[in-house]
Image 1 (cartoon, rainbow, N blue to C red):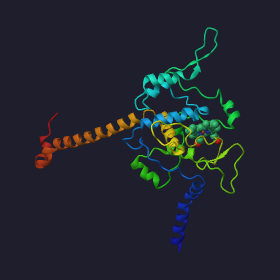
Image 2: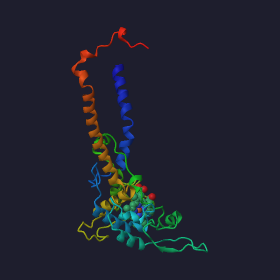
Image 3: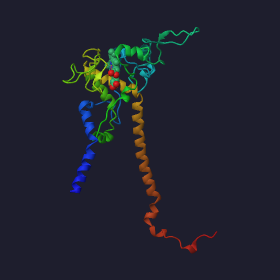
Image 4: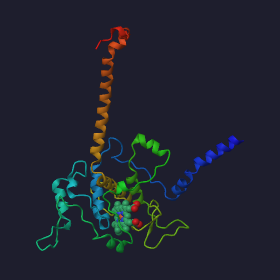
Length: 293
Ligand code: HEC
């Protein structure tokens, strides 16, 4: 009887931490997992997707969101959206950035150059908040700053698949997660919108994407789903511009370690070869044969 009670107590103890997690999951569902070209140990960005995502940023998100850690020159870096330097220079020149102070100390705007970063859409957070009730966060590293708990048993599988796309999966889901009306019994504050995937569900960002809003010239579908995936992939690149180099050198290190292990194994076999063949020759010397000092 005492044993049964102990087992029951243990079961309750083990189940307890799961209960709130499940309740929360019910409230904010886990974002669906997408297939990304840059996932896994051999992942690489899809250049076309990055360029489309960049277009979505420029035509939609840029009105509200800054990208202040991203320099124009990086648009032409290897492993990125693969613009040419001339294209990146032309893109930079379309922006007005704060210039250097002149002799009177006045700062005037000038066209952007490759070394400049994307200028923010608002002079300060207060101005942004006055306009939208909340500060639109800088998107430079948002793909790394956001994510969600995968929970058991998914995190175990993630070790093998090397899943690291929580951030982009969340962004993609967030951008498609708007509902016209909140579910029955849920009220949200004024000037906010119901979003299934936003923690708390009331987001101050109006639904940014609609079908056909951004014109694609490469034949990719002009749907909210495609826009959401493309902009999320682009934001993954801004957050981790050296992702491809990191994965490449990771693979090289693995191959090197495998070759090195093989070499060490055969070296060990060679060194101990004689010992294994003639163990009798390795009898310890009797103390009478010890060298004298
Ligand atoms: C009209 C202005 C506006 C536009 C356009 C806009 N956003 Fe937002 N965004 C906001 C505001 C305001 C917030 C802050 C919301 C809050 O905290 O409730 C926000 C928040 C976010 C967040 C953070 C969500 C979180 O988990 O905290 C992400 C990511 C985001 N926006 C992505 C985008 C992307 C991608 C686009 C372009 C497709 C875009 N936004 C277009 C105003 C905008």
